[in-house]
Length: 134
Image (cartoon, rainbow, N blue to C red; front, top):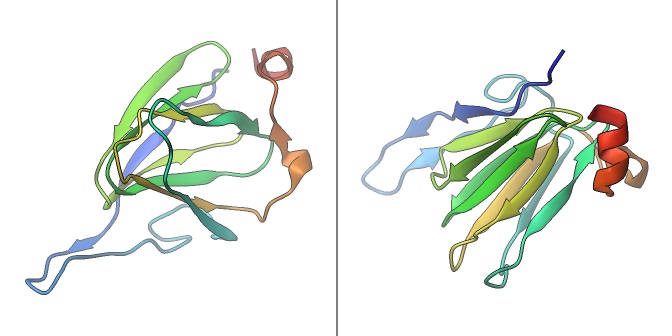
C-alpha cells in the first residue's frame, strides 16, 4: 500500500488588532505529542535542507516567516508543497523522504517532532531509502 504524501493542516488563528496568534497543541491540532521543536534560519540562496526520511518520527513543518517548498517522496511518487503561512503546516509521516528548498530571504522553518533526536531514526542515503520503501 502506498504511503500518503503529507497532509496540510490549518492551525487555529486568532485575529487581534494587537497581533495575530496561532496555536499548535499536540494531540489536538497536531496528531501526536510534541517531543521536540526546532527551527532552521538563514538558509543561503540555492541551498536545501532535509534530504532524509525518518523510520519512526513524525514531523509537522511550518513556515513561521517567509516561504519555502517541501518535496515529499514515498518511494513511488513525489509531491511538492509550498509553505508560506504561519497558521498552516505540513504533517509528514514516517517513511517519507523530504527535501526543503527555495527558501525566501529571511524564511524561518519550524518543525515540531514526535520524538527527540535519535540518529538511528534517520535514513540519510536515498539508495537505502529506496531499498526499504521503493
